[in-house]
Length: 121
Image 1 (cartoon, rainbow, N blue to C red):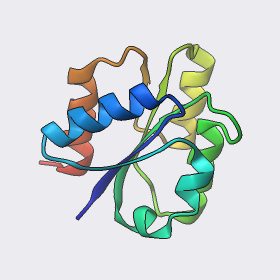
Image 2 (cartoon, rainbow, N blue to C red; image 1 turned 135 degrees about the vertical axis):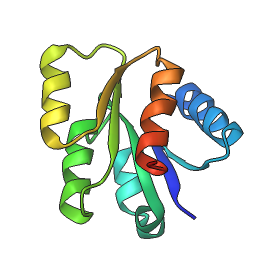
Image 3 (cartoon, one colour; image 1 turned 90 degrees about the horizontal axis):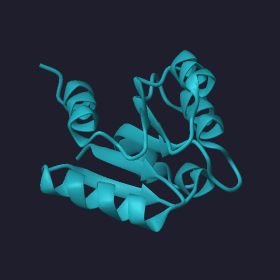
Image 4 (cartoon, helix red, strand yellow; image 1 turned 120 degrees about the vertical axis):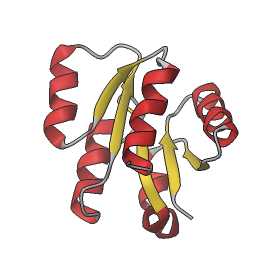
């Protein structure tokens, strides 16, 4: 089954997004850092979409998304940030992210992007 992958170093964000998406019927995998995700080839193979926080210890969210674009064909990614500016937004989109969302996340907008990407009409 296709999985939505969440990568955020904040446990409360991982938990909140996981609970929300599972309540919407999605299968979810959550990671505290990009390095852990990249080491999990089974999850990478099942991933339908990635939700990645920009600022994390170790590998940044943008570095992680670049690594995903080298390993997977056109990964769908939503980059999230609590303090991202317009330059960061444009950079994320230039890497191929489908959206850049500011925290606190607009849940309706997040779900719209997910529905469009995971189950396109």
